Length: 153
Image (cartoon, rainbow, N blue to C red; front, side, top):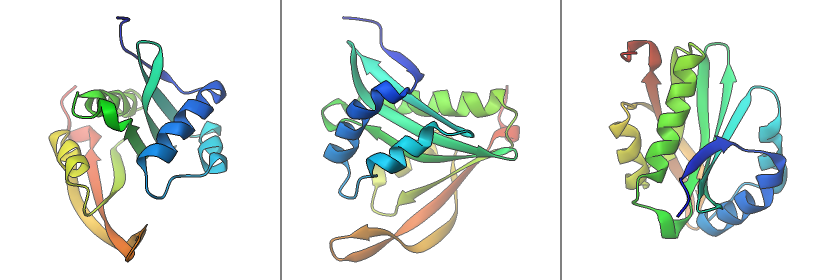
């Protein structure tokens, strides 16, 4: 067994990342949207376990804030702390960049993700009504924030 690794996503990772995206989201991002994450002001990470990409995180930066746009771990690897490690990496990156805060949106029905974000100190700061598509129509997004400057170094 190789040591797990989190590293910056490269264009060569796109195929594996898109496989995870398509297999784990009912409304996945397109390849074009994911490709846009290689532009300036984005940092994306992949989680590698035994040579296989099993998860990723995409974040963007503007001014002194960050937005986490997408966090996903392949379903067969969930509940093993991999998303937790990706979140640690993203938060530490923001701390190093002297960001003041991190924002994200999460489906109101996604209790495991909401619990993960609460564990990292995120608090609910708002709701975006009808933000996400569903088979029945639309679902609200909970907007969450983490104040980086309030965290201890």
